[in-house]
Length: 310
Image 1 (cartoon, rainbow, N blue to C red):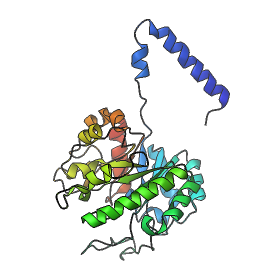
Image 2: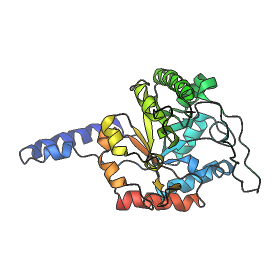
Image 3: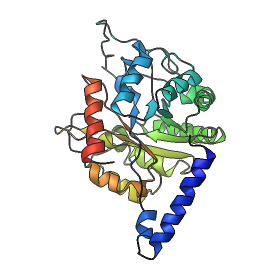
Image 4: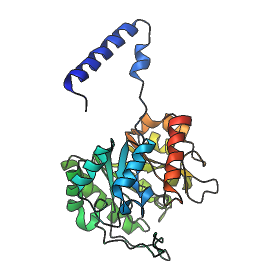
């Protein structure tokens, strides 16, 4: 963090610069300028990897250029086996900031027929009992607040039936209130399932209209919303300012699943051009269970900072 004198100097310099350009008509364009965002990473990309060497993994991520972290589930439970304050200190020591944390809305259940991925030991991964917002809301809110994150995000919650969707909405509204009291913004992260109509209504539409727009905002996953056949920009226009967080990941050409940013069909240029309408504050690269996580995030980082210049 810059010291007070340096901040005052920069503010004064900026004021003088604006004054000197006012007559030439350049002040307006400068006021509309938005500097590139720090590139963030959702650590679910390293699920099954990071728990074996938390500091080593974060060190390699920082070396690529990532500056912001969003944490997720851990085989060790909690924050990759660390207390929230310990995890924050580790991230900060590597020159990064911890902005957001993912939790689940209801007790975790594997989808029918789904099998856990195999770990490095050749055996199916074993997940610890995960806390959830339905049963453990206040503990999850308090833990995230202790880590100093600005955002708490519900990674998923059941929406397969209208009853499930209503129960999810109730959980989201309650958590939004609790998170606000704790000084955090609560968000909901989508997959493609929320866009499948149930009894003639898309659950995502209900999540938008029946949650408090101030307490419950959205983390839009650009891969899954594209897979669902929805236009992110149209969502922004219909709900301006509701999307402070994005998951930036691509969808492969076959529309089968996630891909490194820039290698698939998501129109990132058009989406980023509408970031102000969305209210985007942070974005996080993510790739669900890639074969080579480091290669994937390096490719994504290069595309974002090079071709996309985001």
